[in-house]
Length: 80
Image 1: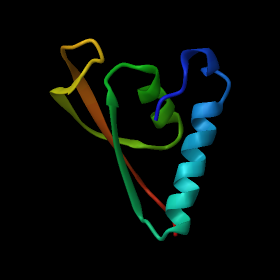
Image 2: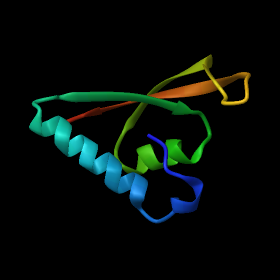
Image 3: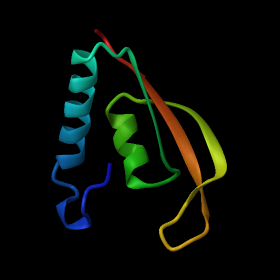
Image 4: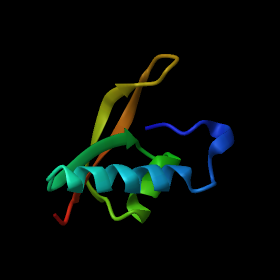
């Protein structure tokens, strides 16, 4: 998920994540997993929303303009 840079810091990403989690619960899912660039704003957002860091993978993802970046993997158990 990406939020346009002009729409950031308004709670939109948190609202979208909560909505995605709610849909997952309604679909009977019990665990969600995601990854994001290490050290970015999204990493801090996921931690605030209760996601648990489970590891870092060096050179896992590509930057839009090329080059590899470090990725942090998160998971979140859901209450069904």
